[in-house]
Image (cartoon, rainbow, N blue to C red):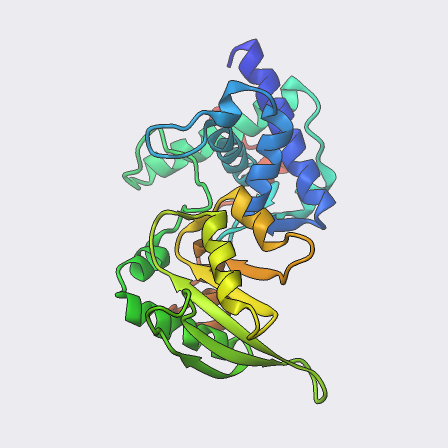
Length: 286
């Protein structure tokens, strides 16, 4: 690890832990990755460079750092799409090259242990981004549009909405359905929703069109997609002076389905905690 790269990792490790502490110990992977990339790579070519696979170069650096922090026992990633500090992560500050090297050493030890177990993993394993477990999302992407609308209806119903109906009428400004959110005995909201099943990103124009279709019918809207929303679309959804629109991207939708137990079955996975064995004399070259 050369000097420049060492300093970069020290900065990213420390910033990633700091951002998680600021958010109370956990946060959505995509949100954390963007914020750390903004802080560490602001005004650098990496922040705007897109790699061949479509990933942002700076965010991939953050994903690599998160992998190593996970292996070192500082971050827990057992919940899909969520990065969470462990107790050790709360207490650790990465402020020196030695700390950064220690985290890298844990990563190498784990890789070696997996190879010795015959896991068949590639020696140069790629970074785990927020799309590290794509199975559920891949299934959603293969649903037909009508099926995805009916799935969103089920998700909203399980999430607490009532009278959820799918309309799916063409020429209705993108309105795919409606429902009622009963806040308490006295307060309820009529909500319109739109479902968009594709891999791409939703831009601000789609948000404005959806809001236009909502006009005069309700002040509450939900936009669900298997893709993602551009930064401009997120700003448009929360623009002052107009009805806000709740955005649910593909990763958020998967997390919600997992929490509600829709289309998934839980399973327990155990991972070796190398930090536990450190006081017992685990050698650095194990």
